[in-house]
Image (cartoon, rainbow, N blue to C red; front, side):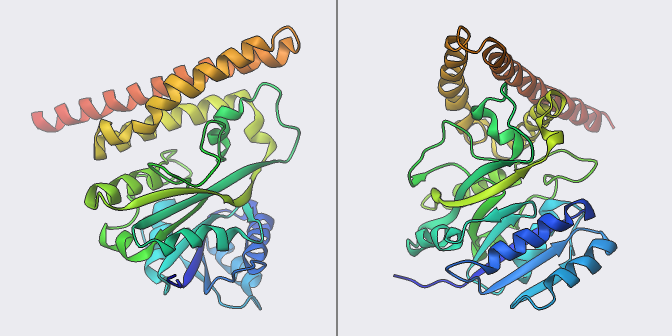
Length: 319
């Protein structure tokens, strides 16, 4: 079995998550399989950069550096990847905490040389009560693993961004995460990890991407993310992001997982919600509305971005 060195990268951008960052760092230092290094990448925030250095003071093998790339999550992740000295780079969100055996479970599949990326499982950690109307099939709205995903180690199209690891060299060879994606305060586009997984597989069809559900993190969900407005805003942004990804990698790969999700997972979820109406009318009706409405808004966001891209292309041709 090959033994790999592992760097953990945490990217952060706001002082609002100062305590979350400290908790994330503490969870990494408590791993049963210690990280060979921890890189805390700060995205264009000098105040947070100074505070992060205070958090890291006394933490073994922890380095704090500013994002050296374009502003946003992709630029920060690329900075961490480039600076990492290990064979494998694991990424943990700054508002998440890892279970003690997270890193050991996440890295173990890399013993297979064909494995290029491994994603773990993200459990929502609600600051307040989970809304009765919120469908578990939409946990991706709050950055967590959703109902309908495999529950055992399985080959998948892409990993989840808050809890993932990549073999470092293939990522560097591929040019890293696409900086046209990766959220900023003014740009809601995500799915950069999806696009990278697809690109790696297109470059090397023998490469394997795995879901390892035993690599568990808790991902914080603040109260602001339990509201209907956030739910639908996030669905629209997901549609926008998927359209951008399709424009880069094509619809066959770009929508492969979404087709089965829409045709299998969501219909079953809708039936289950409707079936619960006699027992919990408010919760069940709300959940059914969220499922159907979420799909409609996500689809609308997809169409919106495709129209924008078409109009931009035509304008460029006419210039």
